[in-house]
Amino acid sequence: MTQMQVNFKQRGRKFNMMRIVGIVLIVLMLLALFVFWQNNGIVTTVINYSNPKIEESFDGYTIVQVSDLHNKSFGKNQSTLLKKIKKKNPDMIVVTGDLVDSRSTNIAIAMQFIEGAMKLAPVYYVTGNHESREGILPELKNKLEVAGVMMMDDNEMQIEKNGDVIELIGLSDPAFSGGSNLENNNPLNLEERLNKLSANKQQAFTILLSHRPELFDVYVDHKIDLVFSGHAHGGQFRIPFVGGLIAPGQGFFPKYTSGSHTVDETTMIVSRGLGNSVVPLRLFNRPELIVVTLQNE
Image (cartoon, rainbow, N blue to C red; front, top):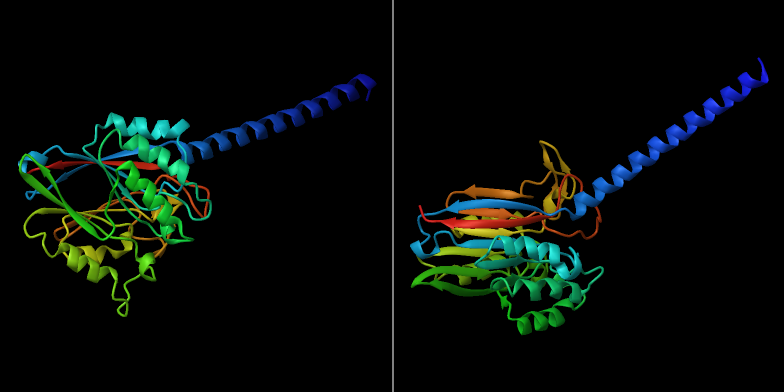
């Protein structure tokens, strides 16, 4: 073999190595872009909900649900998230818990969203389990009330329009009363609180804000018409054609991680949420904004 042949062969090996390195770098770059998109590319889920109990004035009434933000920022001063909400021209914005994250609490980031949202529509809020930790709620609650947010923890109110009414009720997260499930020995357990709040709803169309989807059976037993919930983070990693992998309170392959679920008279809408907490990564589970339009049948 001549020196020229040796040099040519060496150059060929070097070229092949550079090509392999280039391919690996391109794959890694595409993977990084995919992961970034999975965790930052907000998807808007539009749901048309019909119920004959919805009175005429509320036909076409639009509700935007924000859940499990966990301090996440979407653009400067939450501009990306707020622009998406503004496009839907909501009549009401409901926040179903975990506005902040207990492991890296930043109330200022949460309030950037709230202050922007208040310019778009009235905001109604219930706590999640993260607000119950490390004394987070007192400061957050004070700032929310100053901003004009309607605090719905264990509260009820009527939404009125042209003389027609929607009953809106909210539950504080079970974590505030000592656990994530119903506790028979706890005088403030969720079922007793819901009994009290729903006692006067009578025949009016009723909306419940409650962080926990795993308690769907309780909501059904109380014949709540429409429930907004979150907490499950979409199962964190979603397996195509299967669903979410794991959710708090539900374990592996949970039943309630996203979408609309109806049993008897009750429909529960579960948001996949917007931010992350313990697991800082979503897979096939982009951040979700939910838009529900009420329709009178």
